[in-house]
Length: 348
Image 1: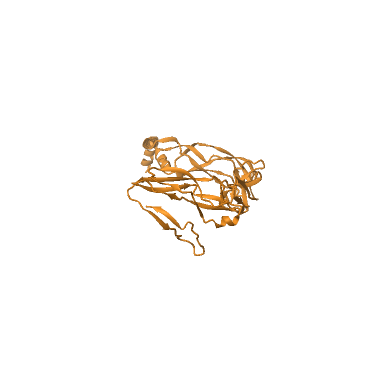
Image 2: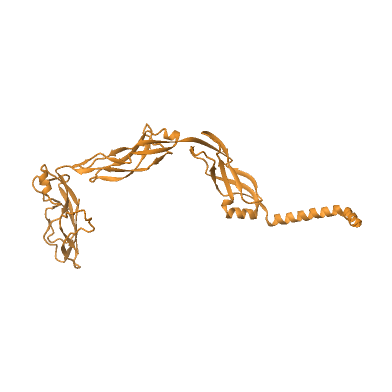
């Protein structure tokens, strides 16, 4: 036993040197096989934790950060294949209203890794108290209905909306409006419109939430007494040239507004008015022609005194004009349809 101890004592230096050399060789082999590399990570989303629910972030802050790291090649392979291994965040715990500078923190769920730099390192931010207020919605109507029509007062549902957001922004809101353009409208309007908010000078206020963001508007529009809408029916005379057939007849506008000082006379007019006869005699080409309407005495058109009729013909390949009765389908049992004219001409 003493001989062994004596031998170890005599050779301790050599043993330690051999161990150190072996360790150096092992480290060198590991580094050679998996060398350390310094790279910049992909962009990582910055999470926000610890924010007081009664405070709001005002303005914009960086949403992502980059890290410069040093790690073995195998670790970089893992980081590049699994972005969730790198996390960045800012902690707002205990911060009250006002301006703050907070540190961007990070963690890497892999090792060994040496942190070199994070960009950005600090973030400037402002916290404001949350506020909400209720405002009535004001309709702004632009444009005008056609002559012979009258608009009523719009109703809004709901009549009020809630504006919420940072206190400084909500305090700027003075006007809450919707905008309706009724130019040319001949029927009542029932539809949704977006709500817009403005300050006392009429400038839009940004960065606030509007609940609901849209409201439903009902704006009645009706014909005045003595006015009536009627479809235009084209009346023709004569036959197209031999070897040709009538392919289509159209009229613009398809409906017109009639007026009379005698409301009873207007009510006696059916749902359509006829044109003066359009002569098709020996027609062999398409035509456009302005023609008047066959109106009862003391009944007038609100707008132009004539309509534009377009007639198309083509060489005969076989056609037939049929007079077909018009039927209403899928009509609710509670409703009754009055069809005028009851018979139309169909070219087949």
